[in-house]
Length: 456
Image 1 (cartoon, rainbow, N blue to C red):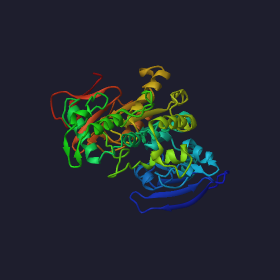
Image 2: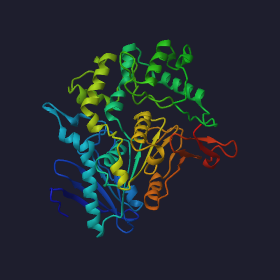
Image 3: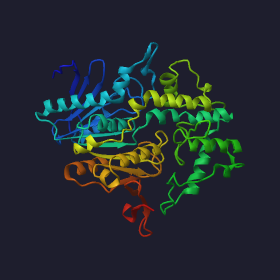
Image 4: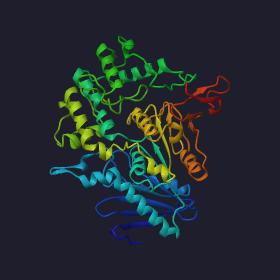
């Protein structure tokens, strides 16, 4: 197949999988890598798009083979460049930022993959897909929302899981725990952080009428100072430790005390952004490369030069330079709504990477822009998952098959009131925000049928 822009198919093979798949790799000139998997025998007539997490840069058959096994013609993008998802150096060069790569990563790669993927699908089957769905988590979830904002006709349905919205804010916010510890001269050992998390969960459990290790971080008022003097495997918890913990949970603030962004929610793991050695902090590469290459624009930059004062300056620079490009937080989805698109967003309340409060903030602005809850929920619904970490993991129940819920909404008009969620033997209904699931007091506490969604 020939594309007028020079896009070439670099490989096409049939796998021995059951059912068999045709795997295709494409390269858009000086731009996007695309991988596809097409069912040989059991195509369901639908196109499926998925994106790349972190800083992108990777293509893997695994991201498309699963959906293709389920009958979808599935395509994935590398985000417009190759590399590690935790390496942000590709955006920088000694002569300036690579603006073309940044635009690919922000929005062009997903759109190019969609256009080319649909063309390959049409050529392979002899007819275009009847419906198209985006389905991805984290950075891929952000790409799905960007599709709705910039290319509202690309997809009939968008499933955005734990979306990495507000990248201009949540990514630099990931450096805040290191700034706090460095300023305090207290690089808190991980076993102390674990003690704080366990204590918060124990103090705030049973918010839904069940003691199961799943908490609501917004209503959890646990004070870390209550652990001062407690012995742990890595020493006695000090007042300084408790202050550090309080500031990390609270999130980044300006020197005058006004809020910059949200903190890591109580109950979420702290090792992602607050990792330490015996004598120093160990910044996560996601915010680390953001500061080094995207803000300081200096590969020799030392994170130890960060202070509370200049952190705020860098944060505002991040908003100024990357908000419009990568924030992906435009609440005007009227074009997507008018194209009859449908959207499901879900996010875990124990997400240790992308602060879930940012997704709630975006949805609130969506409601305000699109005419209120009733009107907005005709095409876009948010579901929050208590106790669920980034995309998966944690003690909470996470959605089992939200893509099927989305297909049912798009093709049959049956909007989901809840998402069925599971973790081991425990099942729960995930409720439409702001409702939460509470135990009825009767039946099994592991059975979703014995929970009801309530706004109280």
